[in-house]
Length: 325
Ligand code: GZL
Image (cartoon, rainbow, N blue to C red; front, side, top):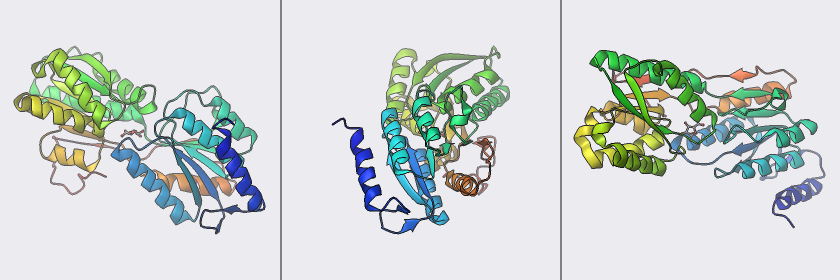
């Protein structure tokens, strides 16, 4: 029997045992609302904080949460969504690891009458009726903030030419595409900046280290003036390599990162990083508020972006507001 049918079969048996009426939570109590949540993985501190936020918010709302972790595999997310449909959850929430390849399974959810909330990342589709709402960052704005910081820094330094190495997140994911696009729209026409390379770090600290080794082999520490990295995990990995290789050269580099986890903000305060663009992982309460509205028959807003900003070496870093998650 093909692997994919086993989870569905198990759920169908569970359904029969529970008399197909209310949805039994693992603990046996009946939850008023059950949310099926496909989380894409556990690749970074951001993702782990995001999972905790969802679990806590579901608990506080009194909702059952069926969470499946896909460990960075899109096909596992698709299988999880199919099992949520078989279980007849009330709402499906998922963070799509990449933007494409979702129409079929989301059409199945739509046919089953189960609303879908996209959390954290978007999908590319011609049919936006396949999802009810998107809750997550405006990644383009995050890229713009990174670019605007660099322009301000170049102005302050009187820099005539800066060579930029970009370490990108998971290819074809929304944060990777839009953090790049927003950044390039700010610096791309400014002759002072040259992006010498864009490499794929997949949002992983280990790959951030690998990328940095390759960049140093290719350009040398003296050949790189700016590192723009799409998340803190990759940045901290890259910094480990940079500081071991050429601490002096690293000191003169401009390091820009995105997420705002505690270790990155601490590195900003220690002068190891120059700018931290915020991207909050605490999306659980906003998601559960939407679930509450939708299960009460209200039409939710199609897009919800949390408030976000940035910290940098232009700020008073002793201000208690300068903190990471
Ligand atoms: C952003 C999120 C990204 C983070 C990374 O909302 O999708 O994925 O920036 C995480 O840390 O891996």
